[in-house]
Image 1 (cartoon, one colour):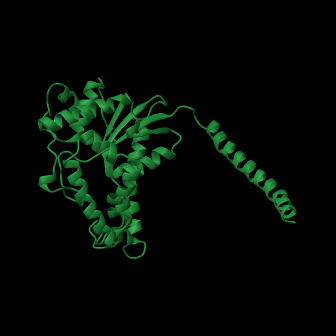
Image 2: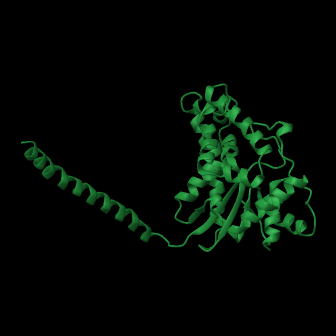
Image 3: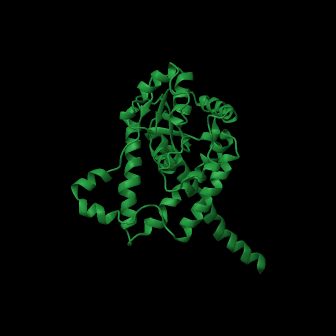
Length: 288
């Protein structure tokens, strides 16, 4: 009797399992076939998320003096050489940095090649211009941008004032306090870790996602959806414009573009680059 029941169950279940397997196989085949609709070669982008070497103190979290890294010290300069040599494995044909056009990066690069700016701590010199010089590149692209906030403030000052009231990235909610503890631990980690090891850790996808999570708590929850609108108009707008500037300097699917920006931009720019059929996102830890 039991054998008969099992036989009947098998007769019902096995065809269903075969059918489900067939559906999954067809689904995977369809996913693979979507690649045929887009270019087989895309411009490669290596995003290098960094801390600001000169500590301008413009972010909500300010690193204590005791935890600040002196990139001009002999030991850190050796670590910088290791980091630069590692990044060079990407073989970039273009370098883009967190700067506005009026910063005149290419003009500064020419002066750098003649010996100027060597004592500047700023990562745009220590990484960007050093790499451009060693790779014999003559241009550095400034692709930073302002958000639409300034335009909005002129169009409707009253709405702008109401929207950004109390929006200052300084909140007392539990998650914001967790982030503050994490930032301090991260400062200590940076101070006691070699630069290459630190960059490999902090340029991982999960790390960048956690950094981005700070924007989704605290002020993000102001007055129902006011914080969400403020984030979109300010932070998301800026990063979308940065991505658009990157598109502007992309000339060929053979381009290999090194992007050096503060790591806070990492999660959004990663998402945009990974989603776009124009680009192939290269993981920092994958260079050989």
